Length: 97
Image 1 (tube, helix red, strand yellow):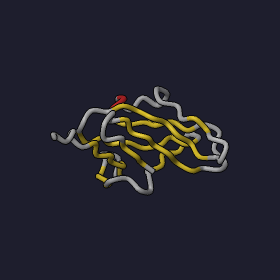
Image 2: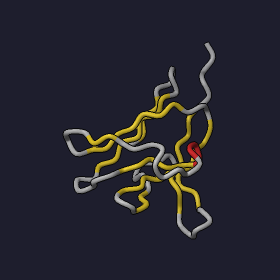
Image 3: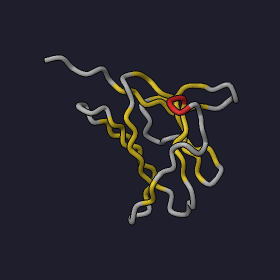
Image 4: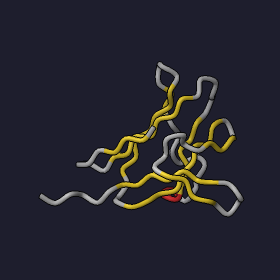
C-alpha cells in the first residue's frame, strides 16, 4: 500500500509478508541500492517505511528475503530491462491555493 501526504510529500510504503525476515524498499530514487532503505516490521506483521520524495514518478520494488516483489496496489507498472515489471509511485505536484 502507498500513502502520500500532500503537504510533506512523505510517502508511506507498506507491504504485508507474514514470513519475511528482511524487507528493503529499492528503486530509482535510491539508485536501486538493495540495503539503503530497510523497512520496519510492525506488530501486525506488516512492513513499513516512510520516504520523502519530490514530485515525480518513481520505479520501485520490495526486496523480500532476496526476492523481488512488486507492490500489489502500485499506481501503475512499467516494463523493465529484465523482462519483468517495476511498480511505480506517482508523487503529485503541490497544489497552489
